[in-house]
Image 1: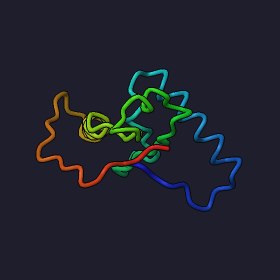
Image 2: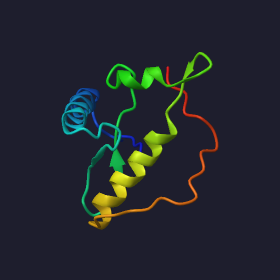
Image 3: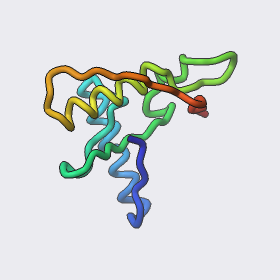
Image 4: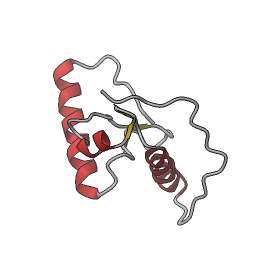
Length: 102
């Protein structure tokens, strides 16, 4: 769900990131990201403490880490969009190591 833009000029990438951040925050699902191509199961998002400052509050000891609930939100929203179903269930989710945010 986290992605890279390959072969794009830096200005185009910055514009895309700003647009994605604005749209995600406005619709209330800021972690889900944006589906760039409808024929694929790929979503793009930027996980940045400046764009999503509420993430800075989730800490283990003194280190901000991406919350487990965030992974679940991303999985659910992506699955709902991909399948078109009204209900989705996430099973057997394992987070093998934290995503440190700095």
